[in-house]
Amino acid sequence: MLTNKPVSKRADQSGCCQPPSVALLQHMLQQRIPGSRLLSQRLPDCEGIELMLVDPRTVPLRYTQQEIHRIMAEPAYWSLCWGSGLALAQYLMARPEQLSGQTVVDFGAGSGIVAIAAARAGAKKVIACDIDEQALAAVAINAEINGVEIERLDDLSKQQDRVDLLIAADVLYDRENLGLLDGFLACAKRVLVADSRIRDFNVPPYRRISQVECTTFPDIDEFREFGRVSLYEALAP
Image 1 (tube, rainbow, N blue to C red):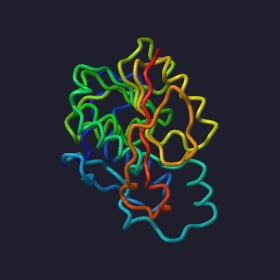
Image 2: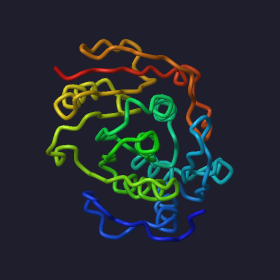
Image 3: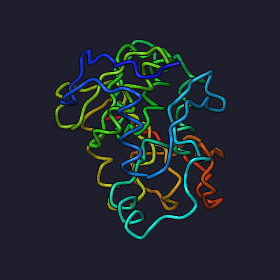
C-alpha cells in the first residue's frame, strides 16, 4: 500500500509543480474538509480497483459556519467515487474489447476511477482531464496504487489530436453543462457519458444505452433518485 511515496510525472501535461504524494493529498483534503482523513478503499464490482477516498468515519458531524462556506466554495469532489463514475467504470471493465488499442480521455476525472478502469480494461493510452489540480494529484496517486499509467491534463483544449473515446461521468449536474456535449464530439470519435441528475436528457445524437442502480462510494446517503445512473453514447459524424 502506498504511503508517502512520490508519484512519477511521466507524460504529465497538467503543469503541476511537484510529484504528488499521499501526504500531500491528505493535506489538500484537510484544507477542504477539516478533520477528515483519507483511506485506501476497494470499490465494489471493479476487479480490485482501490482508491484513496475520504474515510466517512473521520468526517465531523458538525462544522462551523466558516468551515461550511469553505467546503461549499471548493468541494473535494475527488475524495469520493461518485455513483455515475462507478457505474461507467464497471461498464468499461465488463467490455474490454471496446478499449483495446484505444486512446481515451476521461473528462472531469475527479478521483480517476473511470480513467483507471479504462487503463485496466486495455486502453493503449489514457488521459485524465480535470481543471482541479487537486483532482489531478488524486488521479496520479490512484493510478500508482492500481499499477496503471495515466497522463494528466488540466484543459481539454490542450488535447490537439482527436481521440478514439471520450468518457465523462457526473459532469452534467447542471443543465447549463449540456453545452459540453457538442465539444466532446469535436474531440473524440465516440463519447460515453454517465449521469444520474438530468432526467429529461434529449440531446441527439446521444442515445441511452444502459440504466443501472449505482450509488456513490463511500455512501453519503444521497437521495435515492441519484442512485439511478443512465449511460449515453454518441458517435461523431
